[in-house]
Length: 238
Length: 237
Image 1 (cartoon, each protein chain N blue to C red):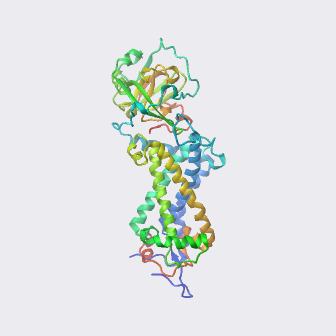
Image 2 (cartoon, each protein chain N blue to C red):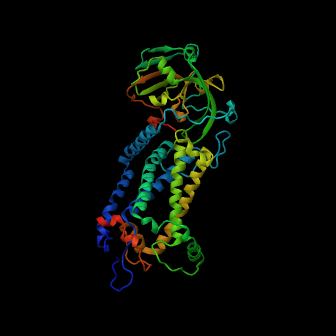
Image 3 (cartoon, rainbow over the protein chains, first blue to last red):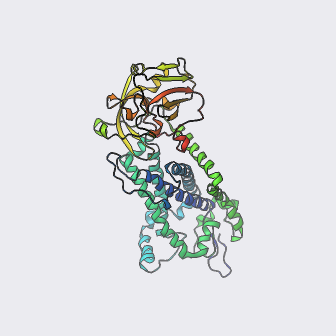
């Protein structure tokens, strides 16, 4: 049941349930902290190879993009915010699955044909494909990829944190050193997602940006709203 | 079936539901930051202690994977050689043990010997595979009659270094009172005559040049040289 705007056009839509907005902000904070403290940790041994012989890739990461001041301080930030990141991520996935809301954002094979037209529109000024739902195919691909990268970061992080207790977790990466490299690359992937995300937020303006805080979008581009939003369990308490 | 809130008039309530996120701002308050981060590390240490599996061995390696002895790095916080008098040396054992006193190296050597090729992991992120030999800490604890209800083992070193570990870590089958590397007596730089060698912990927990060992029920004020400076006390891997 969607209320109609006075003009009869698409009215306000409750796009983001509480848990999406909540985890968006806790984990955006956590990602910043993990990134900066992680780079400080990397400075202590700026290599992905063996200690003997040691081949450092750089002298050290510039201080401006680090957090913690020294290795011990950075580890404190990393070991504190890893809980916020992991618990937030697990809560987000559980709530998406239990509410059924994941169907609006999870990239599935059916979405694949829509990716290229949307990318062509954004990057090559191609015609704009019709907008029929909250997320287009390219967005679904980006958000689903970011989520998988988050999972990969947790996995490889666990390999480095507990290489003895969780030694079996290292096997898919072919060992402990590779897990460190994959951890770094997954971090790069997640960081690569951010500028695109922020540019899109800037282009789409205030009404869109506000929706990740309040949940509401007053003037959605799309005409039809998925029944899924009406079925969202969280909204009952509102 | 519930319906969504009908109009943006509910914005205030929607904002209130996000307010717990603002608690993260406490990390930006200098007066609270240290305590919050200490709490975070303590939670991680507690989780690490739960995760510890008494009979799960750290990976061991073939001879071909072992780094040549000459290239095994020397790590020290103060001096590489604190000039221990090896002839007069004895390990002073105290605390909750039935047989406190000074133990000579040959008494420790008389315990069953373990040799293992394990990974030495540094908190900095690097690791080196080496070959170590010694007596199980657990065998030594039995030898000196450690109180089965004791919770910690603390050590002090010839170079003013000090450490403490949980009894579960001490009694892990790969935790050694190490007196050999590469089948030779431990050299001075690597901690002669006796060091801790525990592949289930980071390097800084594996104190060298041991002088005293105490079995305790509580942690001492000075828990760990690097742990007291801000690293995780638990330091398990």
